[in-house]
Length: 168
Image (cartoon, rainbow, N blue to C red; front, side):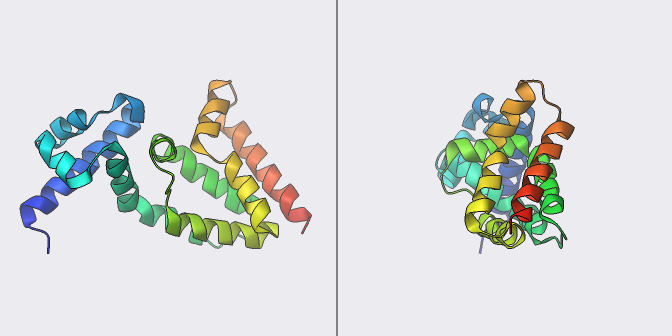
């Protein structure tokens, strides 16, 4: 059982890390920054999470419920599901990019559920992975940086999903 002060520190560190990553992006956030924002010592952060990748994994694990909720939605079409997933990625873009850059582990449970759900809608695991490649955070950020709007990208993702599903 975790001590009450340790649980408070853990929650403070995760909240601070999530907020800072969202505001600045992963590259501009150091373990020192997180410690200061959480009001704990740097050693506390390193002992608890090991390194930046460990901290990002912990933030993702802490917020995984919302990811699983998205994948569990009862969407009638591949386009509807892809649009909902795009909205989730866009809302969590700095964190998604942080996960992509710091770990290969991703979010196994929610990722597997997402692949399974998409595969059922588009007809194969390969097509599901093809669609998920377009939904990578870094890819979406690149398209936004190129001047595309979120609405344009979302429409393209939905169109791709519907096209893949039509071939079932």
